[in-house]
Image (cartoon, rainbow, N blue to C red):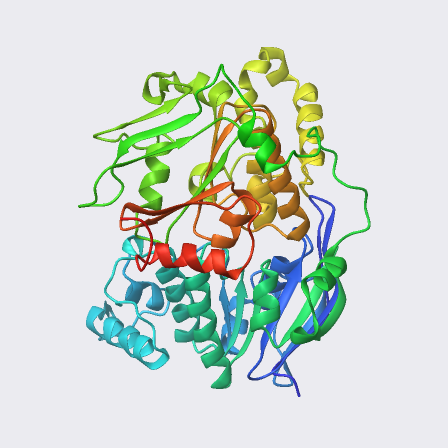
Length: 512
């Protein structure tokens, strides 16, 4: 008997006329790592939320160890042992890890007073039992992304969960952090837990999972042992039979053609004498027009600070950021974003999007100068423009629905559409491929290369070596705020190159 059995789950969103899950069935066994995979908008996250009780299905049933549970109830799901780890963190950043673990289930003294000491002790026991390396007393806002992911899993386990449903658990983790997480999940599975995880990283699916279920347009199209699959098979199963997305880009030229092409009127993007880590010496970077430079580092080594300085979100006390030879800080912000700089932040929800606004308004945020007062009274022109842009980038969602209703992958495509639709002199792209399925990933890579073809200087900030190598002509690794390697990767593939970059990211090799 399966530990969890979902049968014929159907979920329809009337407001967007979207059939997210169409009679989906799934079995999850004890001791199993089960991957759920599909294109953006295929219904993976909806399925995870339905199983976890966060969404009520229109029809279908869920059984845990042979007993039906009430659908659409988080309490019923948790009581049955189902723990959910969302793609976007639900932890309260101003509370400690221990307080987050106890939130809503606080231990009280004399029936009235919350016992902080007992909350801490109980959290410490959970951390010790499962081998987490996170201090229960640490404030969540002080944790790295990988540590927050651990805290999310600890919270699910603390509520009695031995059935874990994880939505894109590694979407913001580096390869090393993802490896550690999966080693931990494998240990939980070996101890008897049943674990399902949504993923876009096919290598994780093949190397880590025991079984996989593929969704396409809300339906299950395959379920098989993961070791029997390969990347081409998974891609074929995931792909919808549709014509290729419209694109204003011509086929991208070769790396050599892009970098060697002359753009005498442009000077590219320069970061001069910037300091991104306490105690580290300042360093400089230059991205020439037509070049894609990727900077990669593990969390805590300065990548976040580099993004803040390069994008102008934080003023550097020393050094400067120059676009086409001009100090970025002296360019009016409205002109900077409209004409000079495209910027995709790593914090997609907090900085990149206004989740409470419509998809249309997020798409056209940089086009405000294109429209007159009448266009804001009567939205027909803006609706047409937004609809065309959404279709061009394959965004699945109505232009008048809230951006918060979009899946993670469609949110990323929204950012790409807004920032890449018009030529800019410089692009700063932090984790530009996060959350994208195989087809959308290839489309995004082609569009970024097309931007370089037009003479843009492209700076990619990526915690994933795979993403850096797939996108870039040149890769710079950072360790504790200093550049430890500067390597041309144009036309290079293979594990040896990736291993060299990873070694530089840990400070074990590279240029001094």
